[in-house]
Image (tube, rainbow, N blue to C red; front, side, top):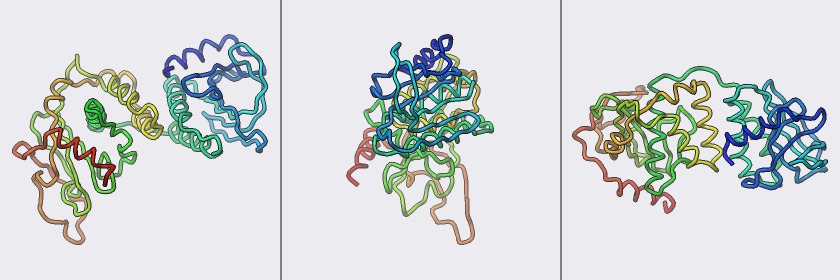
Length: 323
């Protein structure tokens, strides 16, 4: 069951909420002991039967979230009355986009729950608290870069390799994808037609890493693939990867839904103009930064640089497990 259907089913319960019971429904695709529904105040809830009902109950709360673990309560599940000891995570936010994020992340997280690990639900709570507390806007150039990174995930998935889990989840890192201990993948994009990209010196000259640069040429197109559609495709690719789904939510948290639909690029043009370069073939200063010099950055024109064919990049990626 997808996120929108779960939210619609939750909303359909709103008019029938009793005063003192949870109204729930099960999600067979996840687990017979996992439920969604509403509390007595019609707030969306994610409920799990406790594998250790004799443990002490614990409560954590913020303005937008409430977690109660090992709580005995009465509930109505698909019309039948039950009393169970459960973990309950409640979304107190009334914002539709935050309710959707709540469902998306709890659904993804539930697929990784280990029955004898009582700390995983706390980790989920902490992740959601951090997500809902985020503020600030994202710049247009960052949206372009996000689009290119998402497209690279989609591109390689179409060739049979899922690299979504290698996507860096920290914006301060030098590379967009960490494939293994030594291999790095860096994505660059431009809308100017010329294959000129901005680099940090460390992204091109390193004794530590084997680096491939992915160069994407983007062209705006009203009939193109939207950022919203691309996000949906990558969500499907990473449907069981909680970390990647959380990262996507963090990236788009403060982007208006309308803007996600409006940002569109010609997919055919992009597919035909994606190129791969080993960092050794990218124009650069062929020396390490002198002592006392840091954060050197410059533009490099890749137009005349030899590029790698996709099958060689796939071979490079597929060797990641063996190294």
